[in-house]
Length: 216
Length: 216
Image 1 (cartoon, rainbow over the protein chains, first blue to last red):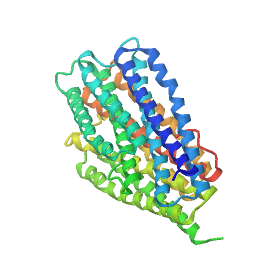
Image 2 (image 1 turned 180 degrees about the horizontal axis):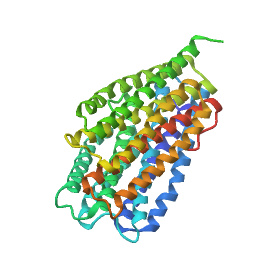
Image 3 (image 1 turned 120 degrees about the horizontal axis):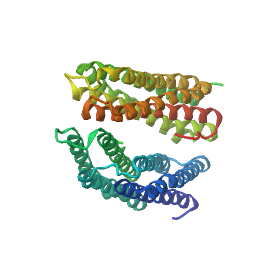
Image 4 (image 1 turned 60 degrees about the vertical axis):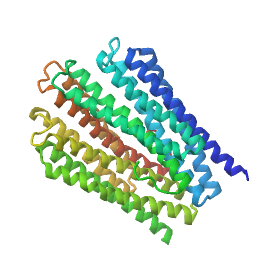
């Protein structure tokens, strides 16, 4: 049976899914800025972050008000507490997209990523973007199969990051220290975006099944 | 007036302060491992992280049980929700200490940090350790003056990290790419430990004053 309470919970989850979509766009744009050296796009990502922060505050206010006024127990309580954590993860992922955009901006009119490394960075970025995009659907549809599948995508991310570090540290690295430092941080940022996506997905599993996620 | 409810809330805050102390120790030991190339100490940090994780679960279980059984409102509700977030920040700071220890372990029998950079890394590590240590007291004593003062310490951290990046990218960097990559990541890890400490301190301010922290 639908009631005002369920409607409010749904509104919170709608906001979470919207934030996930916003973060996906931020990751995609930050990557474009990074790989093309486009300062305008980088600025867009940096200035759009306030939209994510504002939505985050709305989720927090709504969750708090539900906790306070409705005195939920058991499953509903778990859901609201999970929402508060998911929104924190998503906001952090948005912040990491801003970090990527700032590295892009720092190297304009150049491009931070040397040409022969771009395919690898592109692939890491695609995985990060896809992971965040999947969380939007996982949240909207409480999709626990999708959540479980996300962990497999993360394996590719981990392998790529390890490969990138090996490349940076290999004897045939010819792009100097600045590129290596940028890439070490970029690899870390994309990996963390993926981590936050997995954390969000695990919380959806927790909301649906009541089983605490094994990692986050 | 003391009651069972206040006692349970105090027990949660005692756990939080203990976790902050554990994280302080982890940061200190990870730094020792890093600057002396001591694999045994590095392993200690890595294996001790499970203690922090276990305490974190206890804080979560206790908070959840208070939310569920006592149906708190207003200030108490805010306090419990803040506790859930503080414990997440502290656990992440502990994970970052583990990352530092893993870089130390990776370079054994060598030392990841070149000799002339050690004083700077030592100083960053001291600040991170001090910031986390202060949060233990801020939590235990609900010390909002201490929380406000923490932001000033963070400024020194930010300056040091910027200085370190300038050094790495300067024309007289003579320690090669591997050291530069390690240091770029180490700088990021120590900075994030400090960020988490500030976030915890801000939440204590929120608990005491009811004013939402301006950043976290």
